[in-house]
Length: 114
Length: 115
View 1: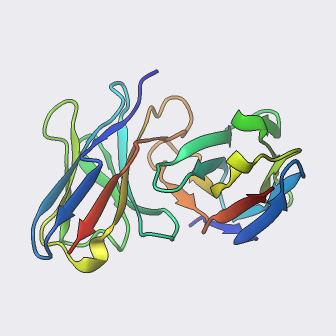
View 2: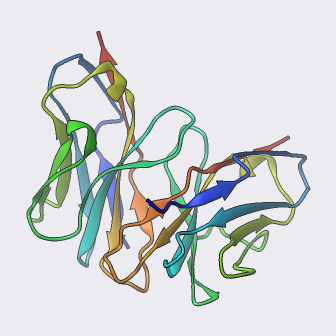
């Protein structure tokens, strides 16, 4: 069964450094998402992406964040200058929009900012 | 905008007892409804979903949920829990709109199954 994959599974970085989290959505999906889950808290929407542009973003998704689909398979989340409060689990998700709105989630990347 | 309220932050229960995890939602448009389970230090696993049709949906691991449109609820139930069901459970909604589709999650319910 096709699945969403994410790399790396765990990323440790120093405050102020740039990080890129990578996702490979399911191949025939058209809509892509990033979510964040701070330890012990709920899952929060960051951004949705369709047709090579952001379709919606939350207030969390400020100028420090950007997303890109650099080729036909990868979907990346970049944090330009990480802060301690960016430490969280980041989940990628994708949807094959023609069949309802069931999102398929990746396993997540745990980001630790020191 | 949509919102999800999980009415119990923690639910302790003994093994083999029944359990219900409650979820209410608010939305001005039609939504899809989901329950996810998250084991410690792991990702989100879809338990079950309501997209349309029968309001009683069955999922994995013996869980089921009932969509009640008039009460805007989607409570999760299991007739007999196991120790292995101990985990965090999240209720989520997404808008019936292919141009949006983002999910809004509840705060989660910690289910602890005791021997």
